[in-house]
Amino acid sequence: MIEYIALLFAFLIAGAVAFLLMSLPGILGPKNPNPTKSKPFECGEEPFSFPHGESSVHFYIVAMLFIVFDVELVFLFPWAVNFKEMGLFGLLEMAFFLGFVVLGYLYAWKKGALEWE
Image (tube, rainbow, N blue to C red; front, side, top):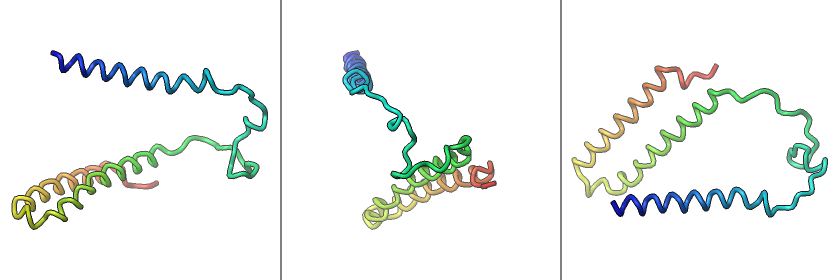
């Protein structure tokens, strides 16, 4: 039970630090707004148009798929470095892992997540 109390204490401290870091700039920061600060900033130039509409949700789906597959494939490097020491067991483990990666890719492909229209 003592482990759960320590975990609860860690969550409370993390929440307090997050709240403190998010609220202090609004309390202590300078408050002198002016029209120049309220204008959109675009690389030091006057904006030629304001953002219109919302971004396509498909862009975010493709970005998330990239991150997921990129993070999964990062595990290939340590495996390749230690391939000789792991032998056949390491090869079978990586084949199993890559099988799941390929299944995830095929699922995303079948669902149309990779189609850009």
